[in-house]
Amino acid sequence: MASGAVSNGHAGPREPRSATATGTGTGSGRGAGVLQNGCTRSRQQQNGKPKTGHYKKTFSESFEQPPMYVPVLTYMGYGIVTLFGYLRDLLRSCGLEKCHAAQERKEQKDFVPLYQDFEHFYKRNLYMRVRDNWNRPICSVPGPTFDLVERVSDDYNWTFRYTGRIIKDVINMGSYNYLGFAENKGESLSSVAEVTMTYGAGVCSTRQEMGNLDKHIQLERLVAQFLGVEAAMTFGMGFATNSMNIPALVGKGCLILSDELNHTSLILGARLSGAIIRVFKHNNLQSLEKLLRDAVVNGQPRTHRPWKKILIVVEGIYSMEGSMVRLAEIVALKKKYKAYLYLDEAHSIGAVGATGRGVVEYFEVDPTDIDVLMGTFTKSFGATGGYIAGKKELVDYLRAYSHSAVYATSMPPPIVEQIIRSLKCIMGLDGTTIGIERVHQLRENARYFRRRLREMGFITYGNDDSPVVPLLLYMPGKVGAFARRMLKKNIGVVVVGFPATPIVESRARFCLSAAHTRQMLDTVLNVLDEMGDYLQFKYSRRSPSVRPELYNESDFELED
Image (tube, rainbow, N blue to C red):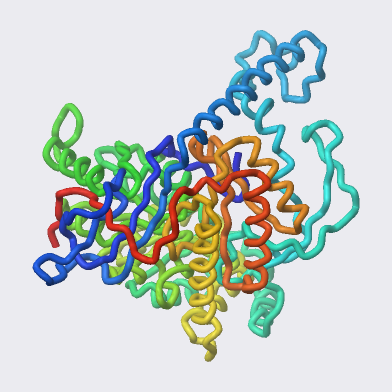
């Protein structure tokens, strides 16, 4: 049950977490509480001198636990809906209620079922009740506001009909338009129009055949320059950038260590590779180091031969949680155990860092310490596609062995030009400061919006600087009611539930944009304040404090 989002893959019920790290050391100083699942470590001064550590700035993330009655009522809600689902299935089987779901034809009753009836139970009886909150048709540029085609259902969301009415100027709080480059105004857009007239709308060939344009080469050089690495390679689809390149990098006899909240594209790529996959708890350095140590000591199963490669796979910003990877410490572990690191910056590139260069810049990590840098152009750049960047030998290898490079059609020239103009704007190569101003505005919007939500008493997840802000709703009945009532207030939101999240952690996920004005955000916040009182989901028990809390992570230190 998700819109504009994907399943978490490994995700399951997790202990809620809350953390603030002040970034001055790597020791295990005792703080004011105990942090579960290893999100952060406490930073304290000893003997009046700060310890040298991995972070130079405050690292603050929140995963607050709700009152006990909330998960209890959530489970009860799902239980009641499930019981009614079985009752309705019984009525359908008896012919007392019409069945709209896909069914096997009578002529194929002796065949192996194409549709597993019970597997679709959730979709038939739970998802259909709130289906109207997803896949809404938009008929304008998905900028800070958009226009929506109104639709209604006469059969409880099994089918929809359009009324012909357009809902104007809906505030867009769900698109990944972080820097506002999904736009149809601006002088720089003229270059996209010129490229379309010169090169056409499509290439109709792969890069290795007749689809390698000078624009593609220009883009790849610009991406490498932006990231501070030797070379880069671009692809026409962000999802395929992960799912088709990981199998080219690792295979049988290799080990992949994957964060439990990694994106589905990463999980699919890992499965297609044929490598052994082991999952570590989200951002939990102890869990990761234990797997690394066991892999080095024990080797492969049965034979105990050394692994050919060990690849750690993480994301910069986790799109469902709004949390950031503990990059500096993971780099330290990677060096300690001689592993490789694959970093997916789909949601972080352009969105965080002083100049928009992602979590690598945000945590002041040397980009050459990341073996494989991956990112997409579908969020901050207002386009489509993705990239792989790093050493030149890595990129040259992928050009020959990546299925996405060999068989996929080249990126359309207008899309290439859109990415180039966005990159030049961010880098200041267009002679303006518009790009860097947008990066700073996004950070201000994200911090302001998240801070106001907490002050109102909502439970939010994630890092303070993350533009992804999940607001926990928990109960299934509140998910649909929240999205419908927000739309009546001319605010478009994304709501997410099981199986894209753990069953007790349904949420609304807000994506902030540099294009959002303070007036827009205040309008949304005022409506949320009213909605929180009406639907009763202000579950936070944390009193606002100006002093950061300190949490102890563990008693282990990383070697530099």
